[in-house]
Image (spheres, rainbow over the protein chains, first blue to last red):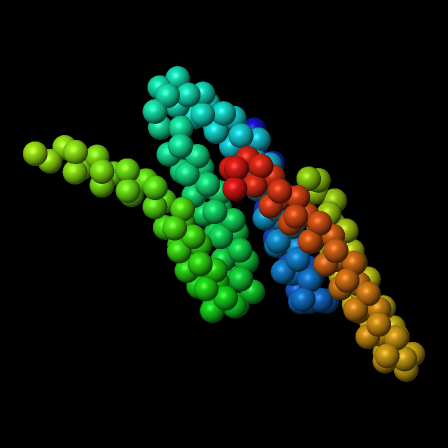
Length: 128
Length: 64
């Protein structure tokens, strides 16, 4: 039933934006930002449950907990950059959007360096 | 995270637009500009507050 609320928020925001466009076009960007924030906040507690499940599973196996932390960081960064990129694209500033996108990618690569080094060591050990 | 934020922003937007027209008709262009700026600042503070709550939640959940 959660999805019905999310769709409701989206459609209400859409209607408000259409009304606001005639009177005050500058305010439409604020309504779309607030709608995005509301929808993301609605989904956050389900996200929390999934993450708790993942951490409990990896704690049982005991090996990949550092990698899971890095993976969670990467997903967090991806969500935030996508949030900002879509807002910038909506308001027509695709240059800023691509800069944010590039920065997000660079940060994700820099965070995932430990994973890459661990993978390489694994491969080197496997090779005769 | 409630829905009336959307309605508040819509109401402020329309109010500022109407006030602007009224003040311009009354011949006070500078006050009209002041009310537009005031409305803008109010809406901006609300939006920034919501965005900061979102960023804090995401930071705590994902351990950023």
